[in-house]
Length: 465
Image (cartoon, rainbow, N blue to C red; front, side, top):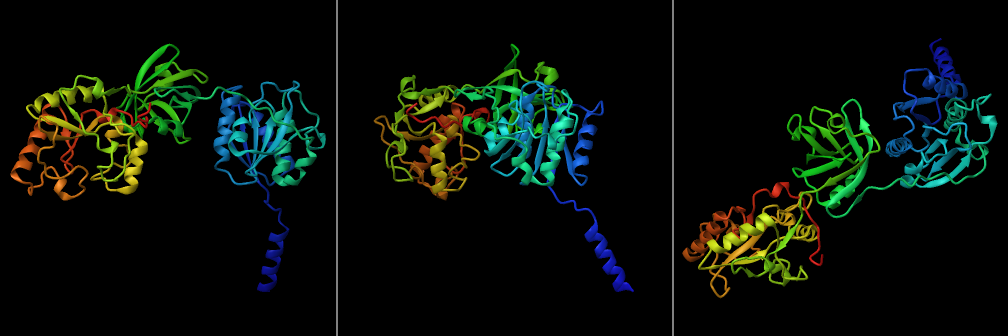
């Protein structure tokens, strides 16, 4: 009896309707105040009763095709192959604009108006094929001139989710419309972009400036940027998390979509700034100006730039020229240190260092006691650090505990094994640099940082520029 019951149960499961098929992800600007979304879902379920429908959002700003395209591209990166995206932001409904379906190279399908809404998914994932939706067999009849979301896009999306082999039957091949939206840019000092979304309910503004561009710019956490839009400017601190800024403080951050965004910690940036979706934005980085110390008053500094020759830990010439570049506060302080070192002279060994060079150094010596991790950026990369030795009036090194780039305990600032003369000269060097405002790195007697380096962006400007 038990055996017969189990056999009957298994047979019942086998006969039950299958939920096989792809997911449908539904996006629109319909909102949720009327029945439009429910009607579209009903049209899907009438075609494919077992459809799995996920609402991405129905609160896209009305007619904002660019935002819809951005959201589609971001979501497609998370959903599996075969997923069908039904997108209805369609200000041209009922006009001569085409209705289309397309498949990306990643095997996902998109159904909606041919108004550029699929531009960003195609650019990001590639286009395998596209068709104009012309076969009325797959539509809900009669087709309303003003509700293609219900009568065309929803039933077609459901049919594709049920069986994508019908794709070629939907209509003739077509080249989808691609929008040429202005792209964000960076000129070495300032980002120019636009607001793509105001995130409710917090009022965070998402820009079209990507995380990769921010990383290449050298902007680091703690830097203060100037944000300008609608003729109004305000300052924001670039942070990793909202709580890294004070309550009520404007901030910039990389959001979960990989975009540079603007917010107020426990506040509303859109309300504070008056900024709206579509507004143009400029974001200016802190002044990156580097001073060529040889061309500035420097009090007789000797420029003994070790990476411009082979006398360094790499044994190779790294810099194309023996140059010392610093940001102005550090440059002014170094000139003061040179005066305090009299009657001796400062021999400067390294100043600004491009980030690309830092990466090479880290590959050779991945030890943060001696080489800064390029993922965090060096004080040298910010133009706010100096490596220096003490020299006599002729520019010859005085006795010091070690050679430059001696990555051993003997290089430590407090190493007690130095000769009396070396210890005296080490202290004289430190007194001159500290007297000008620098602080020393504990593990290297030659390395000095100027205050405020944390707020300066990392740079990767080659010496040739």
